[in-house]
Length: 168
Image 1 (cartoon, one colour):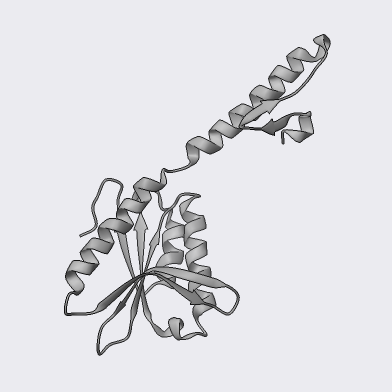
Image 2 (cartoon, helix red, strand yellow; image 1 turned 180 degrees about the horizontal axis):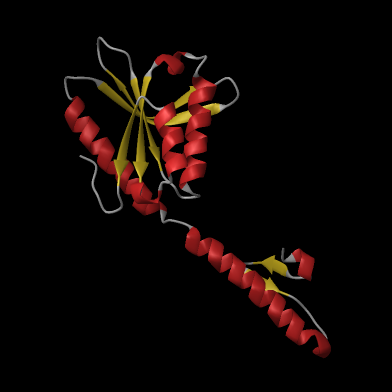
């Protein structure tokens, strides 16, 4: 977008040159680029807030799993098309493993739901496709009906956590 108006972006600064007659247009173009960049920045959710759900859930799982199951974190899984990752995998001694995916709606709940649905579909023909899977929807209040429906159809179980709530 900036290049279209002859604006350069370097060192986190929008820059342009102009003759006196074009100063107003240049100011407007730089202001527009800055406004769009700020809008994108403000739409981002701090990663620390998202990580806290993963940390809290990890602590709960590790406490619960003592003598019940082995819990692994950030487990990679190769699908038919690409590699995926599960936030947690629980391996009970005499039962089928269970995967847990924490879904953060950072770029939107529908995008998170579609990524999860694709992951589950891509893993269907692998050993991971036979495992039970739990989806954890963070910031449950921002999930649309369509987004929730995709996750609900793709997961064995869904846990919804609203902003400010702690997993339990």
